[in-house]
Image (cartoon, rainbow, N blue to C red; front, top):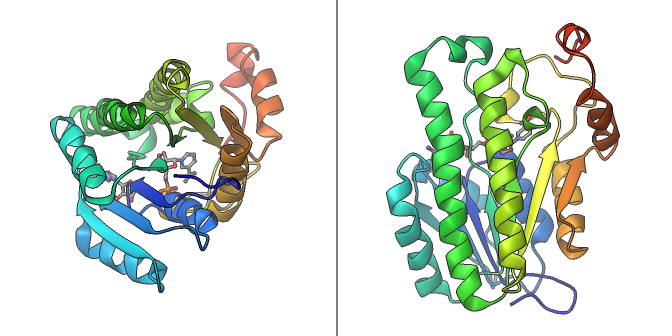
Amino acid sequence: MDNALHEPQTIVLLGGTSDIGLAIVRELLSPTTRVVVLACRDTAKGEVAAAGLRRDGLTVDVVEFDGATPATHQAVMDGIAARHGDLDVVILAYALLGSGQATSRDMAEAVEVAHVNFTGAVASLVAAGNVLRAQRHGSIVVLSSVAGERVRGANAVYGATKAGLDGFAQGLGDELAEDGVHMLVVRPGFVRSAMTEGLPAAPFATTPEAVATAAVKGLRGRRRTVWVPGLLRFVFMALRHTPGPVWRRLPLG
Ligand SMILES: NC(=O)c1ccc[n+]([C@@H]2O[C@H](COP(=O)([O-])OP(=O)(O)OC[C@H]3O[C@@H](n4cnc5c(N)ncnc54)[C@H](OP(=O)(O)O)[C@@H]3O)[C@@H](O)[C@H]2O)c1
């Protein structure tokens, strides 16, 4: 259970090798933290990440988890809770970026991105919500994206999955709040991470560490949404209402 300083004892990262997810875990670590669970599709890669976190008094478990098999998510989450007790923070950080415009023409890739980023993510949130609701406390951090705020032709499938996920997380968060569970939706802009390696940076590009600082501040302040950098909230207020012909010509990276 979180202490008075909102320092969690038990943290679960779904997408246990995510650069942003691991940065949030590192930012949350305190002497109070007892357990970190890295839930990954590639457990060997997860073990490398776990080795970087381990220290005296902290158990770091690596658990096999595939966002593409939503039917398994409740069992994975229940198993983690059965092994470690109450879960204080669950971070949903897995996603596929796809190949930009090419994804909108490639049936197999479009379906895979949509399945993992939306269907899988919805299942993960339902699973985490059920566990936290039963405990009557805990927080869920969802990595959404500004890409979902106004979906671009350049990455329509990815953007649409983030729009859908963001909407579901907000609605579920309102429902879970009645049971004492906090949902935080984080909307970063372009982040320099493994996901964007080799891509030209978009305006307002940031780092996993900056996203982590903002997310943990948002968690401690019981915020519902956080934009990173914060200025993007106002930028997208304007972009949302920009006429289509102008929007389509903007150099957004
Ligand atoms: N980077 C950005 O510019 C940016 C901006 C806004 C939002 N976000 C969001 O932030 C989150 C974290 O992204 P990141 O930047 O940290 O990228 P990342 O380091 O590439 O992390 C993505 C994670 O998703 C995992 N993953 C992909 N498919 C999976 C599946 N089927 N099952 C389980 N895990 C799966 C990857 O696992 P493997 O290690 O096995 O590949 C990796 O751990 C994502 O939701 C992303 O959409 C990123």
